[in-house]
Image (cartoon, rainbow, N blue to C red; front, side, top):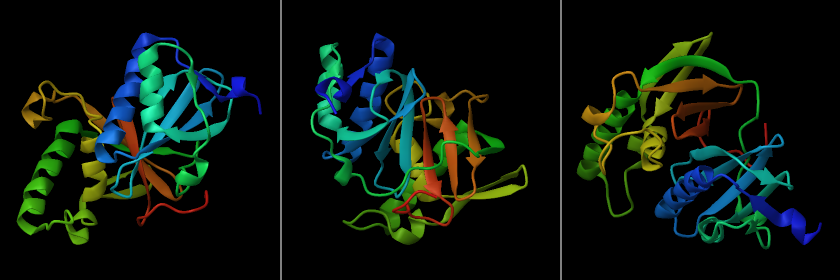
Length: 222
C-alpha cells in the first residue's frame, strides 16, 4: 500500500465543512474519538463514529478515498480538513474500532416521524436523567426504554431513548439557535425510520444513527 493511497480528498469546501462538523460532534462526545471512513462508490465516502449510546452515527460526503475502509483519529481528520489540502490519513487505527457496521443495502422504509417529536422525547429524557441519574450518567433502564414504536412495510421498530439521545447529541436535526428547541423546528421536517434484517436506522437531514435490533453492536458483520 503506497502513501498516495492513504489520502482523503474532499474538494468541495462545503463538504469539508460538513465532515468537520461531524468529526467535531464526535469529539464532543468522546475526546479520543476515531472516525471510520468507508468508500461508497467512486465519489462518496461515509464517515462513521461511535456515540457512547451503543448507537452509531454516520454522515456521507462527496469525497475521494482510494482505500475501501480505514479508521483514523478524529483529531487528525479535523486538522487535515482545516488545511484545505488533501488529507494524509497517517497510520491506520483499525484496531481502535470495536464492532461491525450496518449493511450497505437491504433497508426497508418503515415510516416517517416529525423531527420535533424526537427532540421533545430527548428533552423529556434529559429531565428524567437529571431526576434519576448519577455521576455515571443516565441509568441503563432509562436509556434502554423504548420511547417510540414505528410500524410499516411489515416491520415494527422500537426506538429506545439511547438512540434518540444519539441523534440529538450529533445535532443531525436542523434548528435555529444554539439549542434544538422543538418550537424552532419546522412542522414538516421529518426523520425517516428504516429497518434491515438485524439493524434499524433513523435518517435525519444532517446524518443518520443506527443500532442493532435488540441492542448492542455486534463484533462481526451480519
